[in-house]
Length: 213
Image (cartoon, rainbow, N blue to C red; front, side, top):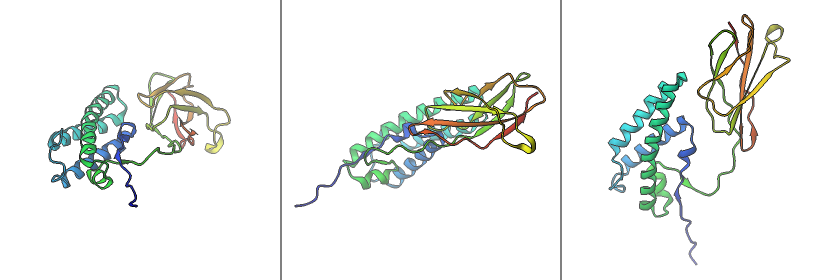
């Protein structure tokens, strides 16, 4: 008796990808659909349009690295528009593939091979520390896939030793930055951030120091 071949579908994992991963997925799909154009002949979104939108997202992503509210909002807007196109292409590839794993992978999309085991939460980093008003520093963390972030800070010991006392807060999002107030002007502080995901807390990021003014 012949072994029944499993049927595969396109995994819609790009909805949960980081911005950087999402940009790579867009590039892979563009390349895959271009290289296999003889198979994918009636795309619901033509490739030049998708390519242009992906490029707009890429530009907005770079601009948002400074953490500005308007830049981040524009990046989110461009990602939403790109995701809409990517979803249409994913459904089309599903229809053409008919469960064929080779066709799905050739398109640049990832196949859905069953439930994905939860992965350890990635460790974010302190991307930027900006002095705001006196006694207040705004901390911006690198975004990771998680449920929330925890930030703590303290005064380093002699020779740059780790602080013996930390002040800790929890925040929902990495951006826009988190204002940390009540700091003493002229004092150097050490800052760290970590993230909470399905498997618990990530490691603390490398410490970054800055003097409050």
